[in-house]
Length: 308
Image (cartoon, rainbow, N blue to C red; front, top):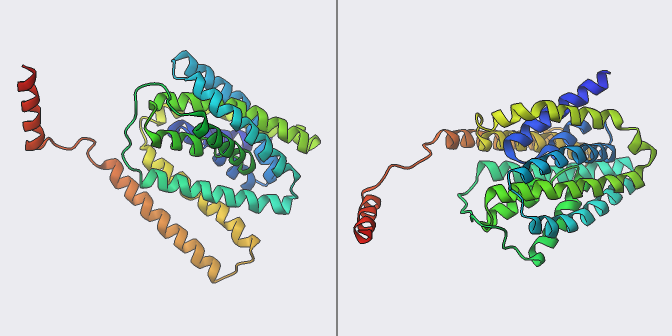
């Protein structure tokens, strides 16, 4: 019962992050599970099995609100499922001492990306139509995203959502809805890969799966409220820093780096993290709309006179 409660709290925390950012359920839950003593492959397996339920519910919600481009789902989710199966197979075949640093390295890379993406973000221009991406672009993206997601315990959202949004060809709600729907295929495929690779160990993780799913369901309403109260830039920067710092400790121990160099590494990470958090906080408090300049006003007057 105690372990089930712990995993439920992990699911709550991961869902709060995912609900506010639209990504990072997997990497947050995996990081917290590994810190609680769960093996790398077992943590990723449990997270993906739990995501079968959460992504299915998410996909239904987005379908109800017409946020899904099924062509995008097929072109992205199919290769993503293949990549996820391969990633799960690779992670399952590795010994624990090799799987842990591999996952830590992937999570440090993803955490760094999330940290920089939300702190040093640049304005994006979004389209208001359906996806115009070709299969030549979406297939490699899905294959890479699926492999990273399964082998690293998360990363589908940071890889695919951020890439598609940065292209500016598809409306944000369509990107988020389509990526969420395609993640169901990725989660199912990764779970099958872990089932084949881990067998009895996979089935023994039911308390982790039940706890994550229960925590996600409990936190979902509050997460929807949180997204309107907390700046995504600030929260994303904070979460990215936590993921980088916690997983960098595993790499430092794996490579046998001792004091004082280990302290120097942690200090540099913390200084950079705090600096980016402060920067994101300043950006989140800045005025959302710049005051109207005389040149803009003059331009509007000219356009109105032409219209008349």
